[in-house]
Amino acid sequence: MKQLRPVMFVGTASDVGKSVITAGFCRIFKQDGYTPAPFKAQNMSLNSYATPEGFEIGRAQAVQAEAAGIPCHTDMNPVLLKPTTDKTAQLVLHGKPAGNQSAWEYFMEDDKRALFDEVKQAFNRLSHRFNPVVMEGAGSISELNLRHRDITNMRIALHAGAAVYLVTDIDRGGIFGSVYGTIALLPPEERQLIKGIIINKFRGDIRLFAEGRTMLENITGVPVTGVLPYFHDIHIEEEDSVALSLKQKGWSTGRINIAVVLLRHMSNFTDFDALEKDERVNLFYTDNPVALAEADIIILPGSKNTISDLVAIRNNGTAAAVTEAYKRNKVVIGICGGYQMMGLQVADPDGVEGAPATIPGLGILPVTTVLTREKVTRQRSFYYRQQTKLCEGYEIHMGDTSCENRVPLNEFTDGTTDGYFLHAKCWGTYLHGILDNDTVVNDLLAQCGKDTAVKDFDYRAFKEIQYNKLATHIREHLDIPAVYKALEL
Image (cartoon, rainbow, N blue to C red):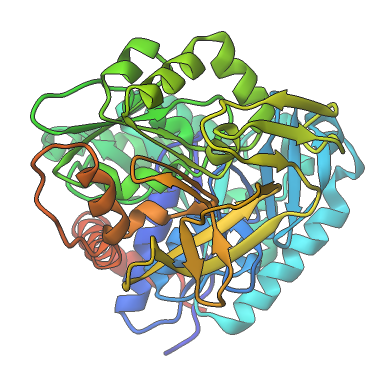
């Protein structure tokens, strides 16, 4: 295949659909015989994933790599920021923690020269291995006060010599001002990289926007590459918890109601994507004690700040609702930080999450946790509850959970074990992605005492179908030949 220049999808704002469009183009290039790879210089997210080598990257780039049909790698997301409080975040560089920084320290020191060098090197390595590199920006590309410190948007686009497409969300409204203003604020050398405008999330009859499309091209001098209709029947993992506001529904009749405890620092909420697609299940996120009491199953999810979130759910009555549900023999399970919370005690002697502290857990499982500076990040193959079907998941945690006479939930292929099994209705695990396995889900739903058929659900096959549907959707509504033309060297 001939060599293509990199392509980059940037936005007029956050959450305009850049991540999904990037994944779609990764699949399109793969279908067309190329060897694409995703790249996002810096990601800010609590949704992360473990690479095959045991490093950590943003989940969105792992999804995009999956769409491209390749294993994920830290070069695809060299800088990951994981917020720990409103003002601080853990810096993950090339997949490993590099300390906590305040927003001031991160954005004001050194104009990011050293970090940008690392980003450029990661991109260069990737561009030598793959064709083309499919790049994603972050937020808006016209934040004037941050321009000279930016390592994620047009600064890296210039280094890459990328063909850049500006994505805007018409469902929000105001696209004429946002698109025109975004382009007008760019300096000439950056403006000339913009090859097209993608209008995303259009509702209704696209023909009604024909005049608007022409007007937008006239005022910006940039062609509209296409208008993507809003879709409801294509399921691609969301990049971050911005999407959770749409998932805070409640109890439903006729299905098994699963409540995920809504934590302020919730991490890896994609643990529940497969459950959301299960027709037997009504899954919702809540910190309302009444809604939790009505649920058939309660799941305590992962957290980037276990102690802070544990204090918060005690203060708002959520913790009491969880323990009461456990006493009433409801199904209660915990994943990662949620597993830690279910124990007798969580200790942070080194101040990993803030000031050193030790607080009591919910007292459901007879385990104790000590938070550690060393982060565990690795993919895992395991057997759930001594069953014979091999399952897949991954670990990302900073903590060691132990007890005497522990009854493990899972056994890894190397003979080591994970989690604590109290009984069929109550357990905890460090494994993210455990609920992507039908063996686990069928067993979990069976504990509710409701008549539910056993279902074989191949989540990996399901996701492959979704990537192909997304590629078809993009091909139908964007000028793909024009994109290829822009990528010619």
